[in-house]
Picture 1 (cartoon, rainbow, N blue to C red):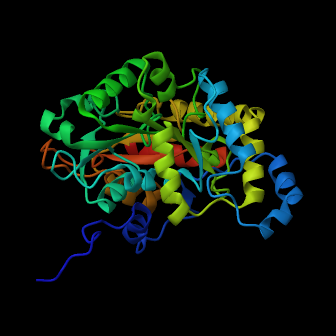
Picture 2 (tube, rainbow, N blue to C red):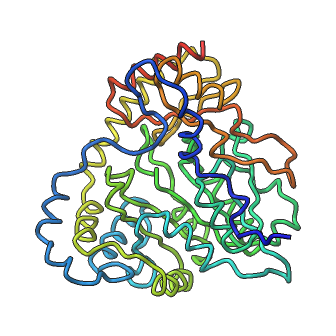
Length: 397
């Protein structure tokens, strides 16, 4: 019998799967890319200046955990954004080379090899950011995909899980505002999740990378509820980055913040395996966390795009306007068929929802919750989006 590699049963990543699906289909005209959430708004001009002023720092190895001034600025931003006490920038925060690094490494650093003498469980929303699943598999944990559907407000209801699974849980990934549905976890949701984490002894990994793209009301952060309800700080790690907030996905700069012991474990792992952000880019990141004007301008542009989507799709079957983020999660008869037809008839490229979710026969005995959805990214210039949204409206009927 052939030995299987650790990731033998992993499907190909979403975008290679999409390329394979569409490769033999010729679109009728120019491509309208609405499949990937890559920001296209201008990043602030001061980023260039910061990099130029610090070019000589490319001659030095960067601090693994982040420059002191960057960590201090991140601490100020967290306190300002969530109206919470200042975190100790040295003990409670670590700089990341994009949040994917931290979301993946958190499982390696923080999930034990066993819990109660058994294989540990890691909880994931379903649909999910693909990094969560591969992190669980990397540490040989059992990933449990918990549906985030219209019935539960597009946020996973972890309380429906059996006690024996919760007792084996070491980590719980949660994204708010959620990708791809744009749902926001409120204070009541966080309180309930913290209670479960305390009762069953697991940590919460809160992916908040879309926190600054919203319509009117700021999405509450997990750390706000942690302080309000007096939760042990070691229960929570929050993750955020400049990719969406500041239109800087190429800068690869994010952070994780949490309890002192938790962050110490992340730092220990990163000292061996991390890829720190170059110092000139850390100075640029520091300046971005300091400034809110460009974030406000960015939010205005996304509001225009979300309002355009509402205007064009408001009468389409099953349309639900997102609370936050820049994705639409649109219900269709079949996501793969819809993706193929939109590409073939209009040259509009979207992503099948099934590529972002998974079946979970062990617990829920249901189909893939993304099977009947497509994800649409509202990141392109507005004239392109208008064409794409009208094509989608025509397809949806």
